[in-house]
Length: 521
Image 1: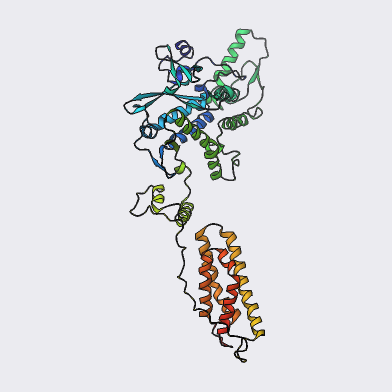
Image 2: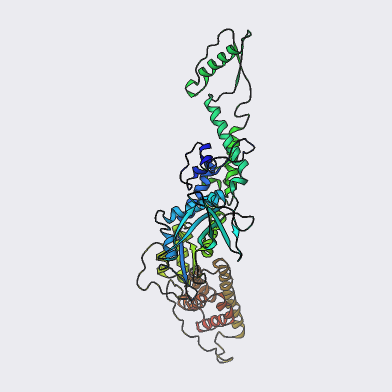
């Protein structure tokens, strides 16, 4: 390893230093050697790796204990909680540890760490291992894996599977991950070659190559002298736009192609898109705004797409690797990323979400306060399946309808058969209008209790005047009917549909009670 480091011009030092491994690597077709370190010199590659590793490291990885009622509590007494949430070893924070192993897995396909036992039990510390120190695993007689790992003294030591934490990237055998460097070598090689071309292009004054024509027949030494003098006078930014004096009847003509003809800038832009594709990162998140309409119609949808399609799979890898390698009682404990802070919605959306949750009983006041990073309050943990619906004003109970007078009780009363038929038609029209309007409102409101209650209140606020006008009832009598109907509607649309006939009968009876010609509407 020291020889490889010297070949790369880097002193051999800590094997955990990425530069220790800079050395021989297969050349890409562009003629460039691509290693993990040289790949990170590409701005797009650096941005993708930084974005994924920093985002994942910044999300808390919480250890939970399952409850018998199906709930969960943070396992504050479990040593693993502190290891994954604050400090996995004496010299690293949890952020640094998760970021490092994610970077290793992103570039090399694998992230490794020693599982050190100690005073806190089976897992007392997690110490990272550079993936290039880990050799192909061997299979023991019992089917478990043995990991040969090169130590600091150059000796290879074998570790059983239960002493190694392993984070696996994309894999073809289910045991070890594959390196994106190996498969993206041509893309990265082209990007490096393009950058190298750009450096030479601008170091030569950003002008195309030229041909110098001499009228005579200068020898080789004279040709070299003319060329060197020309380059000294024209190369470099400090010589830009300076006049050049041609002697001895010389002539200058441009040859080759310009940077525009070679589509130099378009090539660089394509390489940014290509590398973002390898890592599954939307372009706008690495400061490339071209083609920013993928994964949705706006930046918010694209950011959510990054969480769903890029971060979530990596988070699942971490969670399941922790359960497999670090948790003995998997039926009791488990680890989970807390994505709430990353997908936090705007204030208005959160307010509606919290209000619905409290009203329907699947959130308590203290649940909301915890999500808003506020301390709980006394009595704020109570939850109900669904509290009584909110009302703009308490409904009043209308007086019970009087009994229907028997036929022929009074020949002069308005309850003749003809008048009763007209009443039935008018009452039916009122109730049908009521049910049709609330049926449409029910489709719009869906399952949102608060929205349905508000819709009911708004409709019945206008309905009393219509009832009074249609059936020639006093307004206070119509308001009594409306209050009764509003109470049914609070229970849901089915309560109204089941009592349609009864509602028509109530209106008929209220109209019969009203003296003929009463215009108090």
